Image (cartoon, rainbow, N blue to C red):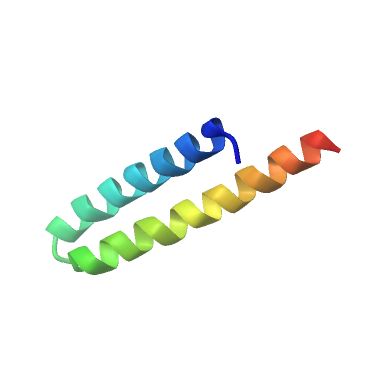
Length: 58
């Protein structure tokens, strides 16, 4: 794994977690659920980025 891939994963996690934490302040979801949703969506973004990069290498 290269540094760019790791940086994009961390960026995706921080952005999605921040969005879900802001949503949790409205009372629709708890903070724990917000962090879980942020982690889940960042993993999905990471997998799609990995597949996109892998296709480019072939």
